Image 1 (cartoon, rainbow, N blue to C red):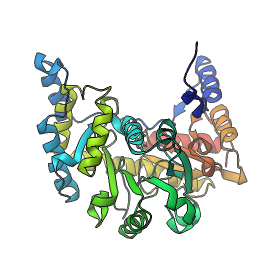
Image 2 (image 1 turned 90 degrees about the horizontal axis):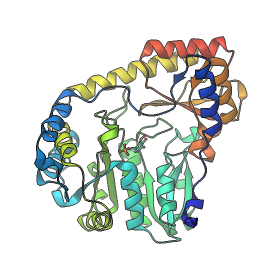
Image 3 (image 1 turned 60 degrees about the vertical axis):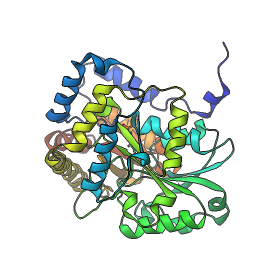
Length: 386
Ligand SMILES: Cc1ncc(COP(=O)(O)O)c(C=O)c1O
């Protein structure tokens, strides 16, 4: 059988060995704590589930949706106002089937073969893979400890900036746990304008941040409307990862272009899911804040614990992840993850899987309660992985 050469642009599963070892240990009855995948263990809020349930009972909701309903887009408009004090219009927004899918549709709509796309290194893999799917040439800009794991545009070579079509920025940042400041957003927008680059802000973790960190919609900043688009996913804020609810917000012409592309193969978001999204966007947000504090308690338990056993304090100012430098001068993240699994029974993600600059680090997902995270630290200490 012949398959498209397009598939060759993507690497094979790097976790195969780790998963195989993990299955072998589980078969032996070992208790394995999985902190590798960023799927929240919290439940979706009851008013969201109720809205979906009501819609599921209505036969009309089982028809092709075809479009975003006006109620859904109005709900998003009102949410941007309530949450970010940003005024958008319904023609500036469309739903996508999760940011993951949306990023692919966006890339296919925004670039041609050989165009240049700037993505962070390390980064959430779809930033890179969506660009590759569209046949673009990927250039990395590094997120390093030296600059607080934040974009440092002064280091992007002029020649790369000049040929870049779009640049992906995501703050709070997965996997590195850094958060933006107003100054940084302004600098990014100035950089994008100076080089005629479309700035793509993935705002997946707007509601998970700690201490005195702040999060923003990029449209809170002057000049963003002409230069930026934003993905706003409900996955992590409302624990609805499987429902695939996210939005692309930006210039109406750009949104229309992505809609045109998607409508060739897509008949719209299942109507009960649209009802769930409306309930999330228009309903109470106190549970989102309570959940943020629960993530903070987890972040504290893990970071304090790792520091107490001799690890460098991890970077963790936002997102549901903790970005930790390998202890004891180790440098190979995949080897360390295998050791951690075999000796401590803990699964985490090797930093190298997020890009070359991720080597030397691992990512812990905060998907277990504080008590369990303290057990993780005790197991790491007991295994001597300090
Ligand atoms: C930075 C980032 N963007 C997007 C997503 C996925 O969002 P969605 O569920 O809307 O596809 C994730 C999920 O882990 C993420 O970390």
